[in-house]
Length: 338
Image 1 (tube, rainbow, N blue to C red):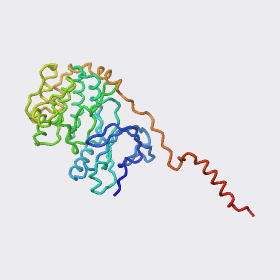
Image 2 (image 1 turned 45 degrees about the vertical axis):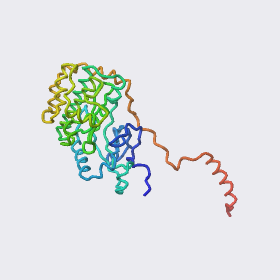
Image 3 (image 1 turned 60 degrees about the horizontal axis):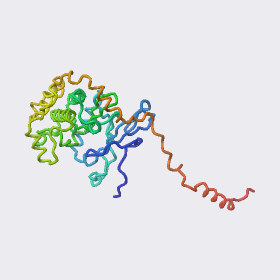
Image 4 (image 1 turned 90 degrees about the vertical axis):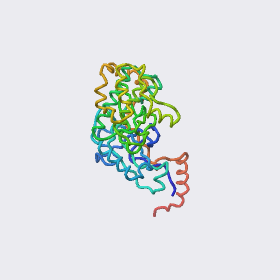
Protein backbone atom coordinates (compact mmCIF):
# COMPACT_ATOMS: atom_id res chain seq x y z
CA UNK A 1 0.00 0.00 0.00
CA UNK A 2 1.51 3.31 -1.03
CA UNK A 3 1.26 6.04 1.58
CA UNK A 4 0.89 9.64 0.53
CA UNK A 5 0.93 12.66 2.82
CA UNK A 6 -0.89 12.31 6.15
CA UNK A 7 -4.57 13.14 6.28
CA UNK A 8 -5.50 16.78 6.89
CA UNK A 9 -8.74 18.30 8.10
CA UNK A 10 -10.85 18.96 4.99
CA UNK A 11 -11.95 22.51 4.17
CA UNK A 12 -9.39 24.01 6.58
CA UNK A 13 -6.35 26.08 5.61
CA UNK A 14 -3.20 25.66 7.69
CA UNK A 15 -1.53 28.96 8.61
CA UNK A 16 1.51 27.76 10.52
CA UNK A 17 2.76 24.80 12.53
CA UNK A 18 2.84 25.38 16.28
CA UNK A 19 4.32 22.17 17.66
CA UNK A 20 5.15 18.58 16.84
CA UNK A 21 5.55 16.13 19.70
CA UNK A 22 4.41 12.93 21.39
CA UNK A 23 0.74 13.69 20.90
CA UNK A 24 1.01 14.61 17.23
CA UNK A 25 1.29 17.73 15.13
CA UNK A 26 -0.40 20.97 16.20
CA UNK A 27 -1.18 23.72 13.69
CA UNK A 28 -2.95 27.06 13.55
CA UNK A 29 -5.64 26.79 10.88
CA UNK A 30 -8.58 28.70 9.48
CA UNK A 31 -11.94 27.03 8.77
CA UNK A 32 -13.72 27.47 5.48
CA UNK A 33 -17.00 29.36 5.58
CA UNK A 34 -20.04 27.08 5.51
CA UNK A 35 -23.54 28.13 4.53
CA UNK A 36 -24.93 25.18 6.42
CA UNK A 37 -23.56 26.66 9.66
CA UNK A 38 -21.89 23.56 11.03
CA UNK A 39 -20.93 19.98 10.41
CA UNK A 40 -17.79 17.97 10.92
CA UNK A 41 -14.72 19.99 10.20
CA UNK A 42 -16.71 23.10 9.26
CA UNK A 43 -17.09 26.49 10.84
CA UNK A 44 -20.31 28.48 11.14
CA UNK A 45 -20.97 31.06 8.46
CA UNK A 46 -20.52 33.91 10.94
CA UNK A 47 -17.89 34.47 13.59
CA UNK A 48 -15.27 32.29 11.90
CA UNK A 49 -11.79 32.68 13.40
CA UNK A 50 -8.53 30.73 13.48
CA UNK A 51 -8.37 27.65 15.65
CA UNK A 52 -5.77 25.22 16.94
CA UNK A 53 -5.95 21.81 15.29
CA UNK A 54 -4.19 18.92 17.04
CA UNK A 55 -3.67 15.97 14.71
CA UNK A 56 -3.90 12.87 16.90
CA UNK A 57 -1.68 10.01 15.66
CA UNK A 58 -3.62 6.92 14.65
CA UNK A 59 -1.29 4.72 16.72
CA UNK A 60 -2.72 6.35 19.86
CA UNK A 61 -6.27 5.39 18.86
CA UNK A 62 -5.66 1.77 17.79
CA UNK A 63 -6.39 0.55 21.33
CA UNK A 64 -10.18 0.65 21.51
CA UNK A 65 -10.49 1.25 25.26
CA UNK A 66 -8.04 4.15 25.08
CA UNK A 67 -9.81 5.64 22.06
CA UNK A 68 -13.18 5.35 23.83
CA UNK A 69 -11.81 7.05 26.96
CA UNK A 70 -10.37 9.86 24.85
CA UNK A 71 -13.66 10.51 23.07
CA UNK A 72 -15.55 10.36 26.38
CA UNK A 73 -13.20 13.02 27.80
CA UNK A 74 -13.79 15.29 24.81
CA UNK A 75 -17.55 14.93 25.25
CA UNK A 76 -17.37 15.79 28.95
CA UNK A 77 -15.40 18.93 28.14
CA UNK A 78 -18.05 20.09 25.70
CA UNK A 79 -19.69 23.33 26.81
CA UNK A 80 -17.01 24.23 29.36
CA UNK A 81 -16.09 27.89 29.00
CA UNK A 82 -13.68 29.77 31.25
CA UNK A 83 -11.03 32.43 30.57
CA UNK A 84 -8.20 30.33 32.04
CA UNK A 85 -8.51 27.36 29.65
CA UNK A 86 -8.65 26.67 25.92
CA UNK A 87 -11.19 23.85 25.72
CA UNK A 88 -11.44 21.52 22.70
CA UNK A 89 -14.94 21.52 21.23
CA UNK A 90 -14.80 19.13 18.24
CA UNK A 91 -13.06 15.89 17.29
CA UNK A 92 -13.14 14.94 13.61
CA UNK A 93 -12.17 11.33 12.97
CA UNK A 94 -10.00 10.64 9.94
CA UNK A 95 -11.09 8.06 7.35
CA UNK A 96 -10.41 4.45 8.33
CA UNK A 97 -6.95 3.05 7.57
CA UNK A 98 -5.58 -0.45 7.44
CA UNK A 99 -4.05 -1.67 10.69
CA UNK A 100 -0.52 -1.51 9.25
CA UNK A 101 -1.01 2.10 8.24
CA UNK A 102 -2.67 3.00 11.54
CA UNK A 103 0.51 1.97 13.34
CA UNK A 104 2.81 4.00 11.10
CA UNK A 105 4.29 7.19 12.47
CA UNK A 106 2.72 9.30 9.72
CA UNK A 107 -0.87 8.12 10.03
CA UNK A 108 -3.45 10.48 11.55
CA UNK A 109 -6.42 9.22 13.54
CA UNK A 110 -8.31 12.49 13.69
CA UNK A 111 -8.21 16.19 14.49
CA UNK A 112 -9.01 17.79 17.85
CA UNK A 113 -10.13 21.41 17.42
CA UNK A 114 -9.96 24.14 20.06
CA UNK A 115 -10.14 27.93 19.99
CA UNK A 116 -6.81 29.63 19.33
CA UNK A 117 -5.23 31.70 22.11
CA UNK A 118 -3.01 34.67 21.33
CA UNK A 119 0.06 34.63 23.52
CA UNK A 120 3.49 33.23 24.27
CA UNK A 121 4.13 29.92 26.01
CA UNK A 122 5.44 29.94 29.55
CA UNK A 123 8.46 28.06 28.20
CA UNK A 124 9.43 30.90 25.86
CA UNK A 125 8.71 33.48 28.58
CA UNK A 126 11.08 31.80 31.05
CA UNK A 127 13.74 31.21 28.40
CA UNK A 128 13.73 34.90 27.54
CA UNK A 129 13.41 36.46 31.01
CA UNK A 130 14.41 33.76 33.51
CA UNK A 131 12.62 33.27 36.84
CA UNK A 132 9.55 35.39 37.55
CA UNK A 133 8.89 37.55 40.57
CA UNK A 134 6.80 36.26 43.46
CA UNK A 135 3.78 38.21 42.21
CA UNK A 136 3.97 36.99 38.61
CA UNK A 137 4.71 33.38 39.59
CA UNK A 138 1.81 33.39 42.05
CA UNK A 139 -0.51 34.74 39.38
CA UNK A 140 0.43 31.94 36.97
CA UNK A 141 -0.13 29.41 39.77
CA UNK A 142 -3.56 30.78 40.69
CA UNK A 143 -4.77 30.87 37.06
CA UNK A 144 -3.55 27.32 36.42
CA UNK A 145 -5.31 26.07 39.57
CA UNK A 146 -8.51 27.86 38.53
CA UNK A 147 -8.49 26.06 35.19
CA UNK A 148 -7.70 22.71 36.80
CA UNK A 149 -10.47 23.11 39.38
CA UNK A 150 -13.05 23.59 36.59
CA UNK A 151 -11.76 20.60 34.65
CA UNK A 152 -11.59 18.38 37.73
CA UNK A 153 -15.18 19.31 38.62
CA UNK A 154 -16.20 17.44 35.46
CA UNK A 155 -14.35 14.32 36.55
CA UNK A 156 -11.46 14.90 34.17
CA UNK A 157 -7.71 15.43 34.39
CA UNK A 158 -5.29 17.33 32.20
CA UNK A 159 -2.65 14.60 32.25
CA UNK A 160 0.16 16.47 30.49
CA UNK A 161 0.57 19.80 32.26
CA UNK A 162 3.91 21.52 31.59
CA UNK A 163 5.24 24.97 30.69
CA UNK A 164 4.64 24.46 26.98
CA UNK A 165 0.90 24.05 27.65
CA UNK A 166 0.62 27.39 29.48
CA UNK A 167 0.05 30.49 27.31
CA UNK A 168 0.53 34.05 28.60
CA UNK A 169 -1.17 36.80 26.61
CA UNK A 170 -0.09 40.37 25.98
CA UNK A 171 -2.64 41.40 28.64
CA UNK A 172 -1.09 39.06 31.23
CA UNK A 173 -3.91 36.55 30.93
CA UNK A 174 -2.84 32.95 31.60
CA UNK A 175 -4.49 30.12 29.66
CA UNK A 176 -4.09 26.35 30.05
CA UNK A 177 -4.09 24.45 26.74
CA UNK A 178 -3.76 20.79 25.77
CA UNK A 179 -6.93 19.53 27.45
CA UNK A 180 -8.67 16.33 26.38
CA UNK A 181 -5.54 14.21 25.87
CA UNK A 182 -5.23 12.57 29.29
CA UNK A 183 -6.14 9.12 27.96
CA UNK A 184 -3.50 9.29 25.22
CA UNK A 185 -0.36 10.54 26.98
CA UNK A 186 1.86 9.56 29.89
CA UNK A 187 2.79 13.18 30.56
CA UNK A 188 6.15 14.89 30.96
CA UNK A 189 8.37 12.79 33.30
CA UNK A 190 9.96 15.94 34.75
CA UNK A 191 6.59 16.82 36.34
CA UNK A 192 5.33 13.28 36.98
CA UNK A 193 3.70 12.65 40.33
CA UNK A 194 5.25 10.00 42.65
CA UNK A 195 2.28 7.64 42.35
CA UNK A 196 2.68 7.62 38.57
CA UNK A 197 6.35 6.68 38.92
CA UNK A 198 5.30 3.81 41.19
CA UNK A 199 2.85 2.62 38.56
CA UNK A 200 -0.05 2.85 40.99
CA UNK A 201 -2.25 5.19 38.99
CA UNK A 202 -3.04 7.00 35.76
CA UNK A 203 -3.67 10.65 34.95
CA UNK A 204 -5.68 12.12 37.83
CA UNK A 205 -6.60 15.46 39.43
CA UNK A 206 -4.05 14.79 42.19
CA UNK A 207 -1.29 14.30 39.62
CA UNK A 208 -2.34 17.56 37.94
CA UNK A 209 -1.96 19.42 41.25
CA UNK A 210 1.54 17.97 41.63
CA UNK A 211 2.46 19.17 38.13
CA UNK A 212 1.06 22.64 38.91
CA UNK A 213 3.26 22.83 42.02
CA UNK A 214 6.27 21.87 39.89
CA UNK A 215 5.39 24.76 37.57
CA UNK A 216 5.23 27.16 40.51
CA UNK A 217 8.76 26.14 41.51
CA UNK A 218 9.86 26.59 37.89
CA UNK A 219 8.40 30.11 37.78
CA UNK A 220 10.02 31.11 41.09
CA UNK A 221 13.50 29.69 40.45
CA UNK A 222 13.80 29.04 36.73
CA UNK A 223 14.23 25.32 37.48
CA UNK A 224 11.91 22.40 38.15
CA UNK A 225 12.01 21.07 41.72
CA UNK A 226 13.51 17.73 40.69
CA UNK A 227 15.52 17.65 37.50
CA UNK A 228 18.32 15.30 36.49
CA UNK A 229 19.04 13.77 33.11
CA UNK A 230 19.06 10.12 34.25
CA UNK A 231 15.53 8.73 34.31
CA UNK A 232 16.14 6.45 37.32
CA UNK A 233 17.56 9.34 39.39
CA UNK A 234 14.62 11.51 38.36
CA UNK A 235 12.21 8.84 39.58
CA UNK A 236 14.09 8.56 42.89
CA UNK A 237 13.91 12.29 43.52
CA UNK A 238 10.20 12.55 42.73
CA UNK A 239 9.35 9.60 44.97
CA UNK A 240 11.70 10.19 47.94
CA UNK A 241 13.26 13.69 48.02
CA UNK A 242 11.57 16.32 50.23
CA UNK A 243 9.99 19.34 48.52
CA UNK A 244 12.70 21.98 47.90
CA UNK A 245 11.04 25.03 49.45
CA UNK A 246 13.99 26.60 51.27
CA UNK A 247 14.73 30.13 50.16
CA UNK A 248 11.41 30.57 48.38
CA UNK A 249 8.98 33.42 49.22
CA UNK A 250 7.22 32.66 52.49
CA UNK A 251 3.61 33.19 51.25
CA UNK A 252 4.09 30.49 48.60
CA UNK A 253 6.08 27.91 50.55
CA UNK A 254 3.02 26.31 52.15
CA UNK A 255 1.02 25.87 48.90
CA UNK A 256 4.12 24.60 47.11
CA UNK A 257 4.95 22.02 49.78
CA UNK A 258 1.32 20.87 49.91
CA UNK A 259 1.16 20.47 46.13
CA UNK A 260 4.39 18.43 46.14
CA UNK A 261 3.17 15.95 48.79
CA UNK A 262 4.38 12.45 47.97
CA UNK A 263 1.05 10.78 48.73
CA UNK A 264 -1.89 11.78 46.48
CA UNK A 265 -4.43 11.54 49.32
CA UNK A 266 -2.46 14.20 51.25
CA UNK A 267 -2.37 16.56 48.29
CA UNK A 268 -5.09 19.24 48.37
CA UNK A 269 -7.50 19.46 45.48
CA UNK A 270 -6.94 22.30 43.03
CA UNK A 271 -9.83 24.31 44.47
CA UNK A 272 -8.58 23.87 48.05
CA UNK A 273 -5.00 24.72 47.10
CA UNK A 274 -6.25 27.83 45.34
CA UNK A 275 -7.92 29.00 48.55
CA UNK A 276 -4.66 28.37 50.45
CA UNK A 277 -2.68 30.59 48.07
CA UNK A 278 -3.02 34.14 49.50
CA UNK A 279 -4.18 36.74 47.03
CA UNK A 280 -1.63 39.13 48.48
CA UNK A 281 1.04 36.88 47.01
CA UNK A 282 -0.26 37.54 43.50
CA UNK A 283 -1.61 41.11 43.48
CA UNK A 284 0.22 43.11 40.85
CA UNK A 285 1.42 40.03 38.99
CA UNK A 286 -0.83 40.55 35.97
CA UNK A 287 0.79 43.79 34.71
CA UNK A 288 4.23 42.23 35.09
CA UNK A 289 3.22 39.17 33.06
CA UNK A 290 1.75 41.46 30.40
CA UNK A 291 4.97 43.47 30.11
CA UNK A 292 7.08 40.30 29.82
CA UNK A 293 4.84 38.51 27.33
CA UNK A 294 3.86 41.37 25.00
CA UNK A 295 7.13 41.46 22.99
CA UNK A 296 6.95 37.68 22.44
CA UNK A 297 3.35 37.45 21.26
CA UNK A 298 2.76 36.74 17.58
CA UNK A 299 -0.69 38.16 16.74
CA UNK A 300 -3.33 35.83 15.38
CA UNK A 301 -4.53 36.58 11.84
CA UNK A 302 -7.66 38.72 11.74
CA UNK A 303 -8.83 37.72 8.27
CA UNK A 304 -8.89 34.36 6.50
CA UNK A 305 -6.03 33.59 4.12
CA UNK A 306 -6.60 34.17 0.43
CA UNK A 307 -7.86 30.96 -1.20
CA UNK A 308 -5.41 29.15 -3.44
CA UNK A 309 -6.35 29.14 -7.14
CA UNK A 310 -7.66 25.79 -8.45
CA UNK A 311 -5.02 23.62 -10.06
CA UNK A 312 -6.64 23.83 -13.48
CA UNK A 313 -6.27 27.62 -13.51
CA UNK A 314 -2.50 27.52 -13.02
CA UNK A 315 -0.74 27.62 -16.38
CA UNK A 316 2.93 26.73 -16.72
CA UNK A 317 5.36 29.15 -18.31
CA UNK A 318 4.91 29.35 -22.08
CA UNK A 319 1.42 27.89 -21.89
CA UNK A 320 -0.16 30.82 -23.77
CA UNK A 321 2.38 30.65 -26.61
CA UNK A 322 1.82 26.90 -26.90
CA UNK A 323 -1.97 27.32 -27.22
CA UNK A 324 -1.53 30.07 -29.81
CA UNK A 325 0.77 27.85 -31.87
CA UNK A 326 -1.60 24.92 -31.54
CA UNK A 327 -4.50 27.11 -32.74
CA UNK A 328 -2.59 28.14 -35.87
CA UNK A 329 -1.67 24.56 -36.68
CA UNK A 330 -5.20 23.20 -36.28
CA UNK A 331 -6.87 26.04 -38.24
CA UNK A 332 -5.89 24.40 -41.56
CA UNK A 333 -8.03 21.39 -40.66
CA UNK A 334 -11.16 23.53 -40.19
CA UNK A 335 -13.61 23.23 -43.05
CA UNK A 336 -14.90 26.40 -44.67
CA UNK A 337 -18.60 26.90 -44.15
CA UNK A 338 -20.67 26.02 -47.18
